[in-house]
Length: 259
Length: 292
Image (cartoon, rainbow over all chains, first blue to last red; front, top):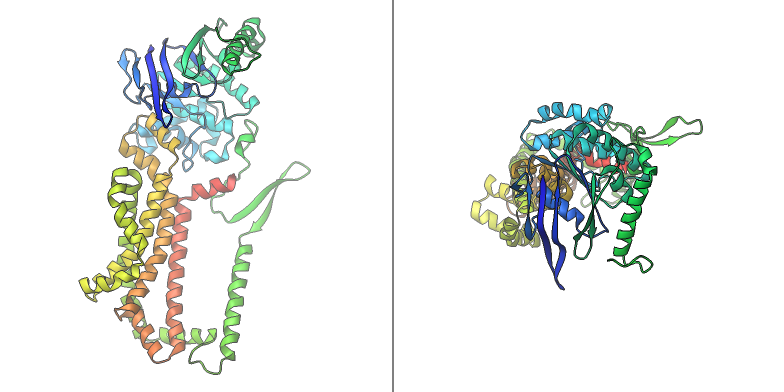
């Protein structure tokens, strides 16, 4: 279980202290698919990077299975919005990169990477370079790289945010299938309401300025899910509710005032 | 760019290993992919044409002179070089010039790259070394030549030092810039995989900095060649520098030009070698830029 307790984060700016996150509390269960959604600048990526151990909170604590997070750990792996692949290394080396960072040799990590490359369906591209791949394929490499280190927790920072709509939908379905087989804890940051509802067990809706937890929604859709859940009343109700909440934060005068 | 490609489509960029063909990929009406080959010899044609034109003007201008005392036509220089190349003295001078050059140059590369990596990586180190880097960068290095000679005499040591001083600053600055401008996301990605500082450096920062390092090597090499000649002409009359001074004193312009030409040829060879290495080491960067 991942517990986030009283997290706050302040930045010192020229105009004084800026409060990015304030009193953030929630817990993510084991094997749960947990999404965080919120308007731009609400601090959702910052929060994710705190769980990853890349950013330290100004106050509060994060624990994974009771152990406080003090930095990156072998139990967690991250997938990035802009893929962040090594441009000088081929696909197989990129997939094995996390293992190489943990001390395996180049040869060993490439060997160990093969089944993961296979799992994202890119085996025949193993010796291609990232710039030779489409965005969707690059993110598959990013996903395989994260899976290859065998993490319990997958941290995904708007992983499909840089992809076009069709690719995005395909990637969501593939991720869904992968997750059904893997049963890992996933924290998934997104700004897409459809994506959050389609993939998640629960969705945390964040408020902004400062970033706080507005509400946590259950997604009562049965698993395994496929495309058809997008047309169910539950799905539509859920996304409509999220839109209502998010729209209120965006300062739109035609939207309902926040409670 | 790549992002606009439809998922699962075959990458458009053909895998070019040798880079022998610089082609544009285009789709013709019947749907097959055709490669319009723009051969590599096209730019070479322009290069050779341009050089040929300048040599021709040189030749004609030289022949129009009443005397070869001041200006020698190109063919005169070439034949003088040919004559010189038959003498042991010429090769002796060449060797005398090259030995300290090679040492000073290698030293500049090793020290420059090491310093640059440290400066680029550690803010403290940057702060400590900044005054000296600024000092060396602001100063015409030629002014240090007399001091080097006073301190180290006219032997190899002072010449090695001057070549080193000429070359080292560019290598250092370019390497440091290469390290400093490594994509922050790549570093963060490495950190997220729980990398040790050493592995992060070895596997992410170093390869990501190679374009900067290689630019430093190329520019530094050029500067080192300048240092090599400057020290011999300014103070220590040995090697090629001594030949230059002698032929100038005797108004043997053809020989003077020939020695300069020999040095230019050497400089060109070094530049070509440096560029080759640069292309090889950071090939990914060229291919990436070509793809976008």
